[in-house]
Image (cartoon, rainbow, N blue to C red; front, side, top):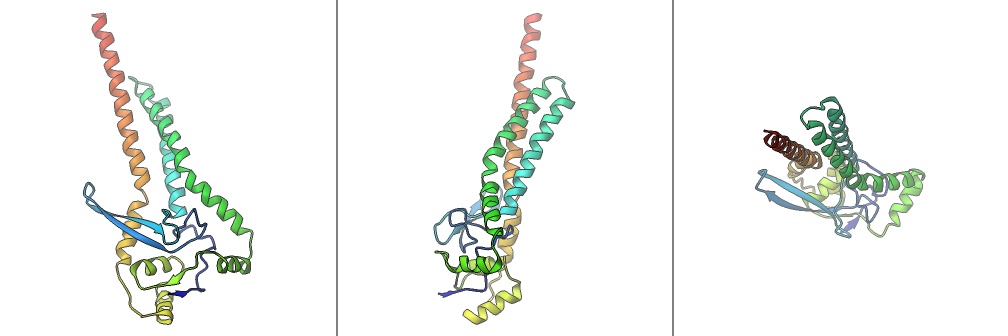
Length: 219
């Protein structure tokens, strides 16, 4: 393995996978599993240094905004439609999504602290910090290296990097991983939306049962 100096993994990049434990855009191992329920592949990106699950900061902020927006829509919807107990169901769902944001915001807060701290340094200082980091990026043959490097460099630059450090062999599973990354970007929002719809329907259903029981008692 050969150390790389062309990529500064300590320079904040909100569109690159980041390890919250090592505080760097480390290289990763890609663990793939098939989701038979959705008929698609799920890819987990784990730090090659500490095996911590990595994430893209920009996507973490995007998921937080969507879930927060969903909670606001539910709360406002409860105010706008105070009919047949639907408002209570929407308010409860909005509260659930609002509570969920406190769990989802952990990742954006981790990144914000790192980004603010690193942004105070000059390019030269960041390079020195990168060279002194306990986990150094290295060249190796594999799909994950191409995918990691193309977060910082163009395809041509990665190709020249491979020619410099090893074989000029281009693996094309990167396109598959890229499409999977885009598909998983909205996964937290889809999960929150699924539970939100289910919770709203459940609360509304039980509220309607209560109304029906009152009518039966009256008659």
